[in-house]
Length: 339
Image 1 (tube, rainbow, N blue to C red):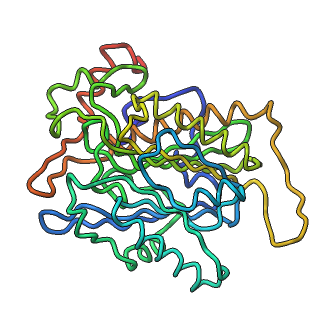
Image 2: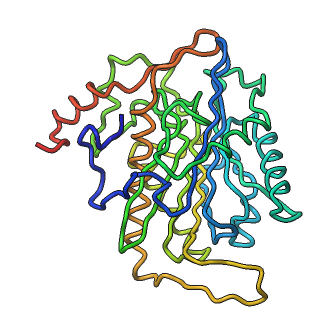
């Protein structure tokens, strides 16, 4: 289930063909999902841009989290490896696996991978560190440019969002002939703050049990890709706007949250030449991309919630899914769905 299937349309811009980050040409996404026994609920998601290096930038809404390699992204303005997202304790093994992947395919002798994380230790036996290198390689091998599986898949398998089952979500927007695609790993937010389509729905979802207290713990990783010709400082600006999409669903970058955003552009073809000619979108044409990033981030979070199913994991702990019928009833009551 996705937001648009329920008549929920966020913003005025049209989505791309797939309404996914894979609408940005050449972008591929792959997952490995690990659901084993009573306690293992985890995985890894890998996003592979069309060509690397690519101009890139980043933004930190709150920094209680990890997205490795960001210092070099900020310093160089470049993304040089595929990007992966997993659980907090598996960042190291995923990073090492991407180094091995880059080395094996002859992509140079120096690699500083970008790997993000959010904490899945309530549903998953996170201390067991079940993600291994072969799971990363499997996600890479499975990566396609087609529709992206959402919800409790890949790195999002054991994640909780706004007191509901969360995980992976994606969406896209087209503005001025350019595409902006977003993928999130949503593991953040309080139920009472959840807002969808401008309606404070979280306060009206009392029938869905909370997984413990409505605490603001958790994090979100947001990946933003575009084919617009942006320079690194413009990628920084695009990443900043994705934070507004987090806020529109009720995220607040709380003290315990790791809300980290990476944006990259494939609008320039970069090489090893000593000098290179690049194209920059004029700043007075960039607002449409800002709106695209905001709307696509908001919808990606909603898609993650709608796609995820109720899950029971470590120690019998259960997190319930967002009920689509309950959601549409609330939105209809507030006049937030098309007639």
